[in-house]
View 1 (tube, rainbow, N blue to C red):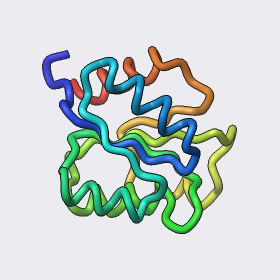
View 2: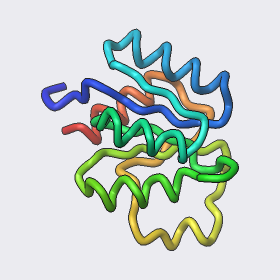
View 3: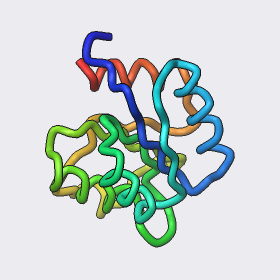
View 4: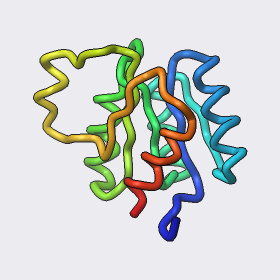
Length: 122
């Protein structure tokens, strides 16, 4: 992958999901930062400027849609992949003023995540 990101920020309120994603991404050679909500993620984003963000949509306090807006406002070309365990998106989410680079529904195979990372990175 020619434009493969070197570092990834993973955001999910489920600690098991964060650990699985961090371990998998690190095994593929990515430097990985993790956060349990959008507020912490935004702090890490500003500190480390990761090239790719993989975030759950539905989280308490500061959700993935809000995080997407904040990141795209700061850096419109930054790649953001949203993930969700819901089989539908809320009506409010479908009217987003900014869209993610990809949407992945849980459960997904790690191979699928890598394929999506490759597709948004080219």
